[in-house]
Length: 302
Length: 276
Image (spheres, rainbow over the protein chains, first blue to last red):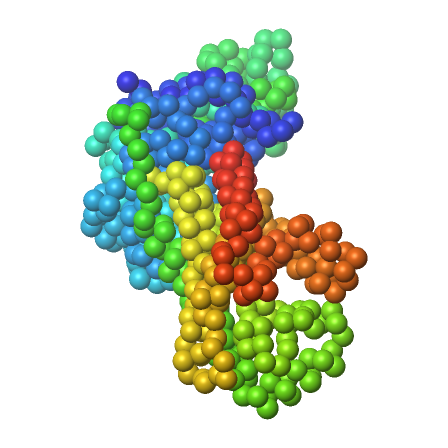
């Protein structure tokens, strides 16, 4: 049984597009990245999974049970962090977390909030209105994790957090998955997705454009190489026929920054004709791969 | 996993919302209670009654209609005490509760973004709506009970020349309670528009139009045919005081308005997506 399934999910807002024909599934214990630019349909998918939106067609399943709009399907087993965590300003985090825990099984509330608050360096007794954006986000994280859920649906969990706490949250996600929980992690921070997720889906304009292991997504991207020529050498022009997919990113007096796809073999053979001082390669980031992917999908590839 | 497992009723949410509403309810209830004491305090004193009636007589007919119209006569103790039941300030207090509560609980939570948190727990949309409905309708009814208690207490505090027909006031309060609950039902329906300002405007407009139709029909006999249109027509103080029977047909109309508006609001609430 899959922990989470989305089958041919379509959601439209009148004539406006939400998501179109999405299908993917997540195995138990997997950390799954969900990527896409603003307005691509990530939050729409998540809200359909949570039963907050009624799909136009298709269905979602959580822990094998079909999600019915407004029916709180398996919500006791889900830890949810909305994209923007907003709470009652007059409550303290302690009271808020107790209230929200009480809206599920009464017995699920445990002392874990104390442990999490200590780990995230949060004072549970200050009013929500007095907390900074980052601290409010920490409350949201504790809310999602406090009842040891089987499925975690996290929409931009590290937004507004400092690097130290961000790392603590990523560690928490890893630990939770190791303990058997399934995580759907929607994020704009692609390095974060790369650091914790095994697989990821990329969404664009409401459609799934990629669903693959992170390593494969990274390979889809362009790699780059920087070449320093010996002083006084005239920098040669790239022959597009011999080196397809290679383009100049930046050119200075003695240096050439080139991006390429596939292997570097042909490029090195061509460079061997010229007096090269040294070369450096940079590792392709998921972000570069992602941007490249988008340019390609949008038909903007140069 | 059992697909037929029932979601438990969110008593925690009901308690949380009740505690949030309680201070406003107490304040309104206190003002209504004190108003009844004040009215009886004036009515039990013949000199003051004379002065008050002289003052009211100077007012134009349509303003006099606000306070009870023809029922305001020297010697008609019940009619004079009933001023406390239909005085605009009292009606405004009821309206504040009827409009403020469901719009704060449904539209307000949606606008604040906290409804997403509530619904992300083991709580169904229907349960959330029922919680808001219970607090509104019971709260409105309880205000009417406080108003009646105000009359009971003040008739014990002050001595009157004639017996005050408390049973008739009780009937009036029960009937008025259903009217207040029906107004709450209308506000519940309006709250499903998800925007608090809009919900408040819709409910206030509905109630104000109904109130003015009632005043117009009392003041201008040629407009009597409009009587059945206004919700306030279904609490007829004169009929309640003059007849021993309960005004069952009026109560049924008000209950129908309450039921239809609350159920319709529930259906709209259930069907609509939360705004992104």
